Length: 106
Image 1 (cartoon, rainbow, N blue to C red):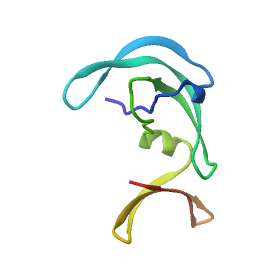
Image 2: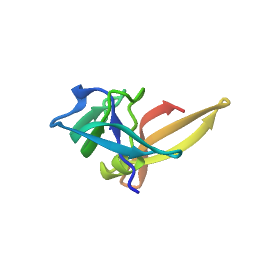
Image 3: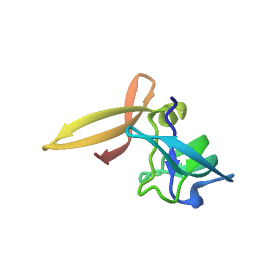
Image 4: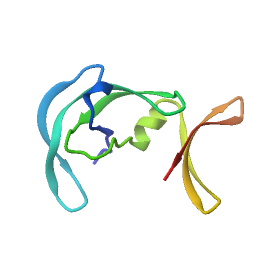
């Protein structure tokens, strides 16, 4: 099973091929996918993520960005706890120095 990024808005897609498909969830298989192809996402701090095989679903309540796609763009992920809040950090290692690109609340 391969994790995929699922987007609920067509505005992110560079290319989009409409085609119904099922996705496997923890409990069952569901007919959620309406299309797929290339997408370009800009995160809140301006970091761009390009994804070759993105799934499109207007039924999804959220955009789901996979760990695999973040890493394919040369970034790393880690979590931190600060002031009793948990955050997801998207980081980049540059000349053995870690740079936090995005800090997203979990």
